Length: 447
Image (cartoon, rainbow, N blue to C red):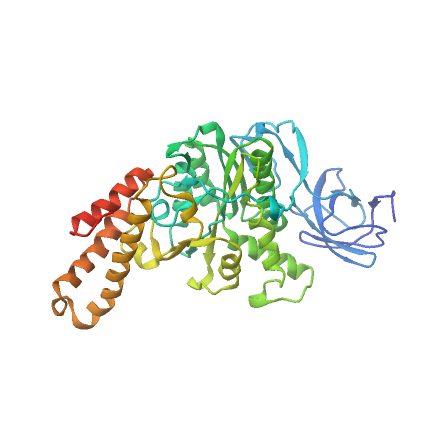
């Protein structure tokens, strides 16, 4: 029975967080609905599928207490919108943009759709300023540039959690070789599908933040749709702070694999035909709708830079998730299980890693005049040392020339003294000095 123009009491079935509502006159994909429980309480949901007059809805929570006879669904004729204000800074929210830090909700200055707006390609600014992460393997050899999207490719058992936390604590905006004012740089942290142990770890990290931040935390037992909304809330907040308030925003998302698994679950609920490995065929365009929101706009001071973490299933870099991510983004930072087993942190393998925009963010006036030269020499000698390790397994160290043994020693020292830095943070000056020290320590040329 229809109660009013937009309120229906025609729920046909309830399957956990999924509702089927019949005899619906008007609805649209992605529309937000309010589900009214028998006790009068309400919960939001989102329309996943429309089949004639039948609508499939997913709740943003549990369906305990719902029944088909005494519950109703109110169609709002609106998509999900994000409340925006500078008062959201230094706050922690859940995947539905509700505060979980014990403080009251702020009064928004404006509301914006979470889908965001595509940046006009003709108005995109060229990324050309350096963002310091505090990790030498990134800052020295795979530099992150303002407006770039640079994913971290990890694998099960590797310390991507600790690395993400280190970036949250250590990231700085550097302009003309000097750190920018704290008020002009913001980190937005989006965590998806966290266990309670991971949640406690990241909350402890956020408590010690020196940089201003906004956090969106989605737990593993939260609604699946919320896992899809949280990155969009984070990016909508980033766009507001960047392009309305003129701030430089670094968005750290962990883990994109959990996002894609949620996308597959929703696609299955819609009964869509699966693509590769069961993921929906539109996963590429869906990921692009997230990643392409990073960038700069000509004539505006702010920027959105993105560092998403991607856990590669079965250590397979050709898996659809890292594969499609690599097509959309501008490089990759690859973590190595071999380096992790050696006790190297961060265990970043610099040879398959790449920052395609590095050249635009380094050099005199940005980092240091000798940056490119130091990076080239480190790459050159480390790559040769890595190749010689294969020869060493065949002929043994004794069967190699003195020069080749020197290259092997350099590769070990490079990993031990340059890539490895534990929980410490290095400035770009300290990073380049460490690189020069490794070169000099083995009698190699320096720039």
